[in-house]
Image 1 (tube, rainbow, N blue to C red):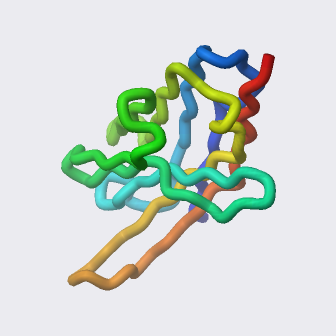
Image 2: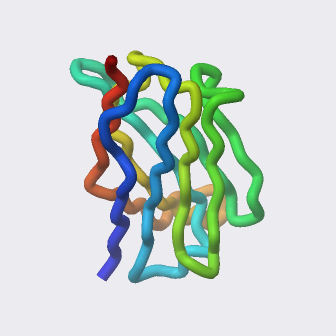
Length: 120
């Protein structure tokens, strides 16, 4: 059974930091492209960061220099370190696992989300 379980969300003051974790099970984690998305109330889901099987990363412009995505294939876990948090970062953060074969998405798994609230 495939599972992606996010943790680490919560309430933090502006300028603070949080580290999100996403623990994966039920599939070959090391073969998957891993992503973090977020969705704020009334807004569309937005891609925040991604990390390939080989460790190459990409970030949304809005989080570059503040967020860092990483993965530990031995622990089947992907992380999102978030620093210098702003009120506009307030969202539900979702973990996503994608397996692409010959340019076609074969598997696409989602976690249940974790709430991040940035407020004083």
